[in-house]
Image (cartoon, rainbow, N blue to C red; front, side, top):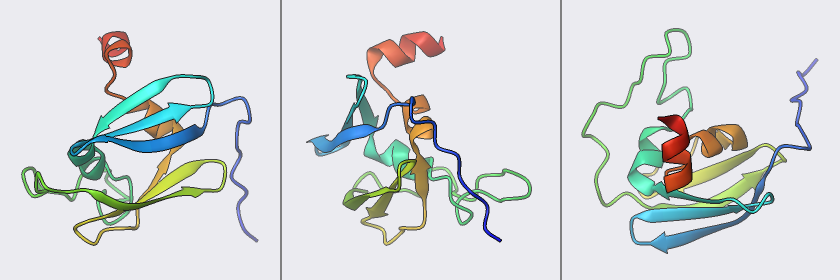
Length: 115
């Protein structure tokens, strides 16, 4: 028996994912919010079991090991709940839930709200 993933249909989802510049990714959400993300930060925050120990929650990515040149080479929507990135370093197992992506937003409004 497989576990069903509950999707909150009221939660915003990405409407458009686009490269803002060489080092920044943007997401336009269905609620109109415009998120921005340094691509290196997104790669460092990968939530997959290869990057975060499932039992301890400890990050397996050592600080400073992700190169500044990291880039997404492919981006795919996964169901109604996540985005998957294929990175230029060959990594592709991370699924970024929409909720996580919103929490990681680096726009000025989101940064102020976290303070």
